[in-house]
Image (cartoon, rainbow, N blue to C red; front, side, top):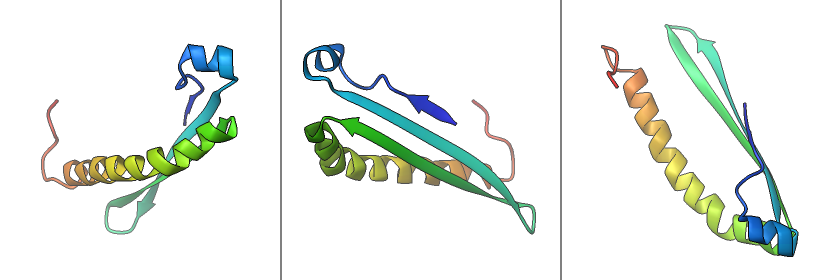
Length: 86
């Protein structure tokens, strides 16, 4: 589980009352045949309303694109025959 409340510029926080509260959870489930399923969940809250609206309009689509690429890369590395070297 990851938790963050720091993705707002300090000036926005101080002058505009802007705030975010995000959590990400990752859970592995063992499947038959020596396989594993990764479950991810992202939840967030933003204030004031204009920051929440900006998140819905811009960040959710961008996050979907970014997460899809990252998860495909993770799948490819997890399913290869030999361990990946860093």
